[in-house]
Image 1 (tube, rainbow, N blue to C red):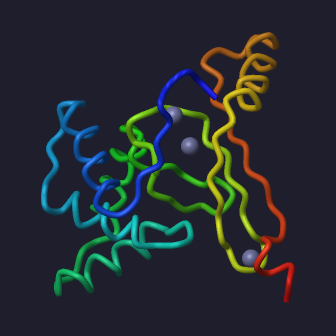
Image 2: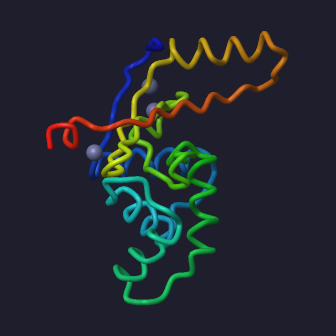
Length: 154
Ligand SMILES: [Zn+2]
Ligand SMILES: [Zn+2]
Ligand SMILES: [Zn+2]
């Protein structure tokens, strides 16, 4: 792991870290953005923009369009507040909005449970291999599908 105090946040601490990160990037932490972040962080599995729009609509008692949620998710991904799980076509809140890593995801084929790992040595190797093959700005997407420990025992 890189030489820093790698901290995984949850609950209120995660919301505070996310807000600080967004504000540090010159963006506003609006009520709508907070609602989307809270909804995203409330999911235990990767959530689509539609899932999140539904959760926010319920929480706010008014219809929120998936399109506006999608734009906010885009901003969150660009600001390190959320990550896209490509193979699930969905989003997760990033537990470390304050530091940047090539996050690795393990996704259970049975229940959808997703585990977030950070191993800069592993992703760095992929990054280096891509760079030496002439790829510029390589962005490793490392996702592992399998059966989680909970499902394996059933
Ligand atoms: Zn870190
Ligand atoms: Zn990560
Ligand atoms: Zn499972």
